[in-house]
Length: 155
Image 1: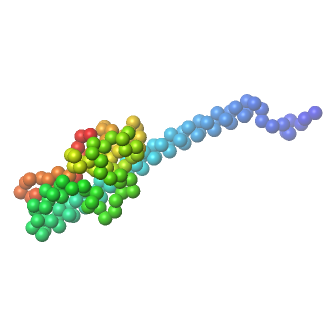
Image 2: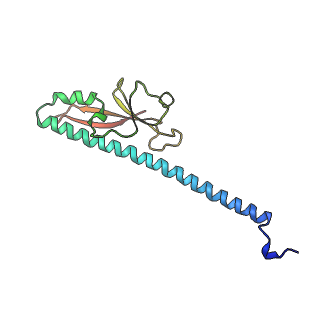
Image 3: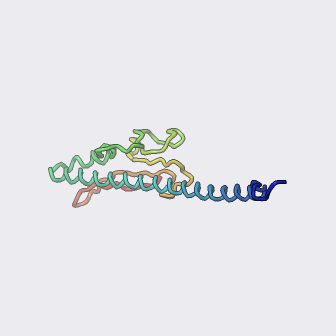
């Protein structure tokens, strides 16, 4: 006769362990996806902030040298060229970029309309903007104080 202390798990106990493990795994995976998305948003914001800072520094340099006419050319160029480093997910220049055409996420420059486009990893869950594609454009302000700004445009 088998002693009760030597018996293994009952089928009910095993089913409960599997159920609890499944629930914990689902919660952990859901949180992991949330944090992955938040990291992607933070990285995209960091690139935009670096671009804005580089653009302001270059515009100030041109203005201090009396080369305001070069500001318009700067507004037409790829803003990634202003960075001392290219983002690891910079994919290059594409005309009318579409996520399915490119096949991966990252930054692309569209020379057709002079916009910098961010293609997120998961366009359905990316909550950075209402748009599925984030588009930024360097715009030249014709005012008393000529300046450039990297603004988000509708995607």
